[in-house]
Picture 1 (cartoon, rainbow, N blue to C red):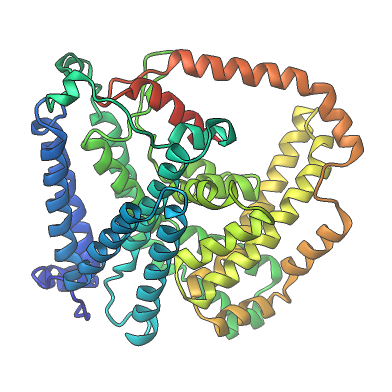
Picture 2 (cartoon, rainbow, N blue to C red; picture 1 turned 60 degrees about the horizontal axis):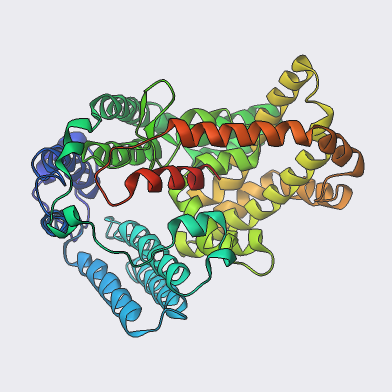
Amino acid sequence: MATSTTGSTLLQPLSNAVRLPVDQVNFVVCQLFALLAAIWFRTYLHSSKTSPFIRHVVATFLGLYLALFCFGWYALHFVIQSGISYYIMIIIGVENMHKYCFVFALGYLTVCQITRVYIFDYGQYSADFSGPMMIITQKITSLAFEIHDGMFRKNEDLTPSQRCLAVRSYQLQQSEANGKEDTKYEQMDPSPNIAVAQKLLICGLSLLFHMTITKTLPVEYNIDDNFRATASWPVRFFYLYVSLMAARPKYYFAWTLADAINNAAGFGFRGYDKNGVTHWDLISNLRIQQIEFSTSFKMFLDNWNIQTALWLKRVCYERATFSPTIQTFILSAIWHGVYPGYYLTFLTGVLMTLAARAIRNNIRHYFVESPAVKLCYDIITWMATQVAISYTVVPFVLLSVKPSFTFYSSCYFCLHIAGILVLLVFPLKRTEKGSKKRESIQPVWSKKLEEENILQKNSYSTTNNSFSQKQEITCRYQVLKQ
């Protein structure tokens, strides 16, 4: 299956055999190679055996090689974006460097996306080099904001998450100054093997589902003229749900495989729970069970593309001076790319999020006292959430304006209208009756939450070998839960 690509064509025979574009084959093969390299990295370049400099050099050159293999000369964009951003952080004072760095990194990403989409005819060069650039943008801007918080802002002006992640100067411990860390931790390192094996199993099942089921349930069928003319409304909404559900396993595969690679290298260890069980989900990007059984729009978003959601929260939502929800969705749309469908999805997402929040704040407290009633409420909200999510993300998959409006017009913009009516009927803030009920049980929940936080702080520890890692992991875990 020949396709245009700027990356290596060494695996073109394999691409033809499996009937997949060569850029996708390159990606999967490089990921599998990275998995083996991660095991070697953790075993032979452990932080107790070699200096951070050597570890960084090896990781950098290995990453550059894989980038060149997948994207060819387009990989130069990664170096240019990172290099100029780093230069900005050096020459601009800590007071404003985060703003300049943010504008440049996001602007450079957007220019590259516009070039790829509109100059190269909607991805004629199918290797999407903007994907890694999106992650680099997250890393660069996060670092800039964290340095600004640590070096310029007062500690009492920071939110708990900003305080935990702020980058400050510190004195090297003797073990770090010598280039290696305390070797006693090497014997205590937990093994990631079980976590890696479990995640590879999920990858295999997701890939199998994508290769078999997904192709039989195309999202484009939702705008098929014959289907829209002959199918009943229940059938159309059911197919909408299953077709969008079938589109998710490719993301499950890619994100879970990346998580497994990080775990194999020794990254992503969150700590032990009170039973001594290890957890390797500190940098996981999704929680499949919570996604598929989410009972609210927020619950779905909180468990989908977790690291991006956290980045949006830290650099935008927590710092916005007005309309943080709207600003966050706009930034998310710009960061994702320049396809019109992205903007339709995120603008619809703003409406769906506000409407879902209004319903939850004004209605949910009536259904939580009885377990049986709450179960019925959860089933209904699960169905509504899945339909709303599917309805919202159709343009994200279709990409273009015309098919997106064809879909929405065929549904008479029903959920858009319903969302607007909800916002007109229900206030965004909780009703007085609901507030009183919440106030009556608030002390109980506050006490429970406080006990859970204390338990987590006492029961979670870590043996990762970096400076003050034990305290930092606990702190960052609390941030990730927010």
